[in-house]
Length: 264
Image (cartoon, rainbow, N blue to C red; front, side, top):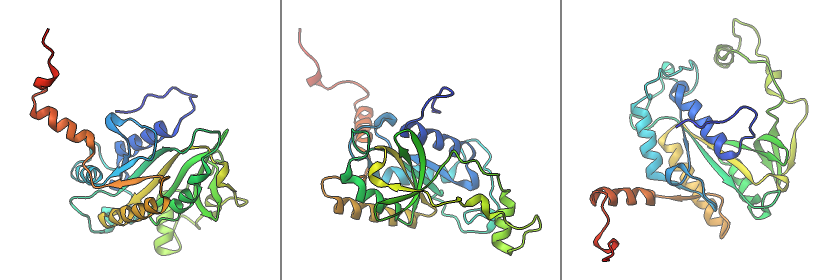
């Protein structure tokens, strides 16, 4: 289901993640799909969310076998493009995994989560963090110690044709002219201390292959162990517990057990 959002409304991490996933899955650019880590019925509860491996594998396989009734937007020259001759796994679609989080109840993030946030940005599969500080939405792309480097989404840049980007990457001299690198750089390095983060954020990971996903799960398990009592994200083989509940209801035909009845 596509989230219904009124114009001018401030978007929280959950709605933002759902909106991004809906946009990606509606066009499947280059065959890429998106998955939001959520609880039962798409809900988002408190505490560290759990990434269920079997659920992600199922989602990736379903996306690999179907484009959802829409025509994929091909991205010629991209590393995952079929036109590029790259090998594809029939049971895996390149997947963006989005994880909405609320790390604390105060104005800023709970300091106990800061080391984990910094380590998340250092993972090879990380594509950054959507978040900000109170009153400002930002996109975090890296970290050094407790300093987070970010891009300001409110700074508008001229769009560069995708053919020009990949043409430059492949030949070094695209026919359309030199690559305008200034649109991919800030005038100054933007950074802030991680302790100033708003507690609401979205982690992003990109797994082009099944091997990328397996490696990500291993890294996340190590980070959760290292975090002790304050993990940011946990990993479980699955399936999610609510899937087991659904299976039990189907076996019972939707009827309650004898213990559910009360003699009046």
